[in-house]
Length: 376
Image (cartoon, rainbow, N blue to C red; front, side, top):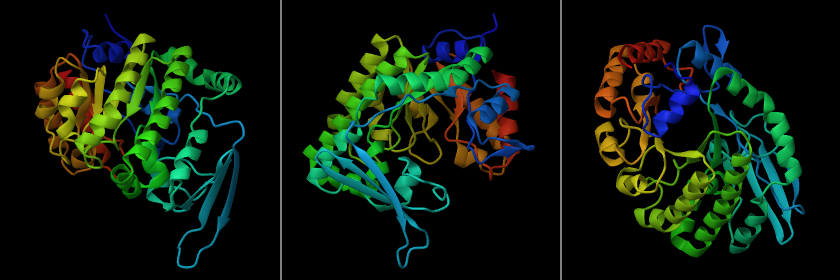
């Protein structure tokens, strides 16, 4: 029986039998292929379908802020700075928080601050600097209102309809974990806070966790099929294993327990720095572990499989920067064959370790897809 991409991905995440090995890859918005832009979710999904792969549809449920929070933004020019500085202030009931970023290439058109990789890499002034800021931060991480959730459901209906039409799974990234601190403070300040003020650091983690638990509930009320928890910036290239065990593990277990109680699959994305934590991550209860980077870390595909086999499905495979960004399509083909040798065809989704970018030779991606079709 031929499965839809949704059926194939969900079955693989549960280590169930599939009609053939699924392949799910994803494209950076800067990619253009034969005149086909990847700037929008629809563009990227249509390219993945045209290639014959198994794309997923992303739909992020909204968060909220305290009703009394007021937001102000402004720009200024600073001597010695190449780019304008975008300031944002959040006036909370217990004081004001401010953050500022340089309006560089990725953030050139920003009218407000967006928490993500770009805000971390272009940080001018961090959001959280004092103990008082830690208390204020909780007003920025509140459940969204029923009115906002209803509006989101209405606005997202075309996305869910498209997913149903094409038999695709809808994935909700409900949580960023400690990455949220990097986006607001920068990596260096977040790491120092974990060492200098462990209580304050854990208070921030708890604030983020409570907001993410609420999002899991919202996802269950919508038509989401799978939850994604980003964990790429809480690994041991930032924090030591003791911090992960104390701060992340108990909260992750609660999130997984809630997701499963609501009938949702949930996977964990990692990138590098996970080697000392493999056994811990394997025991958390995630349905699937996604990402990894075998060529730019100390974690080979064999080590990954040894840790997770029989405990969580694996969604990994070809190194994006190491191979798909390289100059040898045959090496890409060899890696696809190696992945199947290591992981087999059950409990495995062939993937890439990061998004495919404009400057990568497209023939490498073509080679990956072609070889997958040969061996699946």
